[in-house]
Length: 172
Image (cartoon, rainbow, N blue to C red; front, side):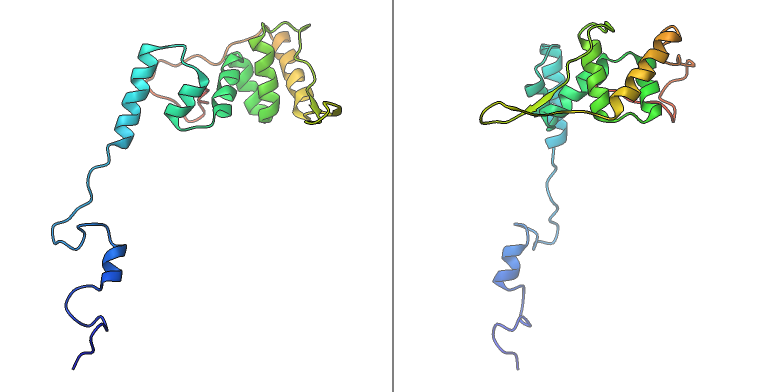
């Protein structure tokens, strides 16, 4: 003898059916295709084709990334290849790379180093402290060594297709 509602009867209970996706109780049911990735890639290709100078905001929305990441990638791309490889090999931090990117985005003149950033009170504007990054002096030393070496570029391709193990993929 079976007791009603004990779950030993025919089929799943209504609570179990609510948790399952619609149609999954059918024998030949499969989830539908999800073309969201393909659609997102197509939208990105169309946006880049129509407007090569796409804004950081629109690009971040299309890539589903924070705008600050896009901004950082653009600053990384401003650093010359040979210097960028040296900075990465030395283990310079992201703040120092951003600082160096700002330096080269503004022309790269040694006398025109980016200013020290001040952290200010949001209410009165009083200067609270100067943002100092320990990696910036190291980055400046690497920059000076790179200039003394004659500003060599990154190692050239060997003619093989694809990227090697030690290839660093840079931002936009």
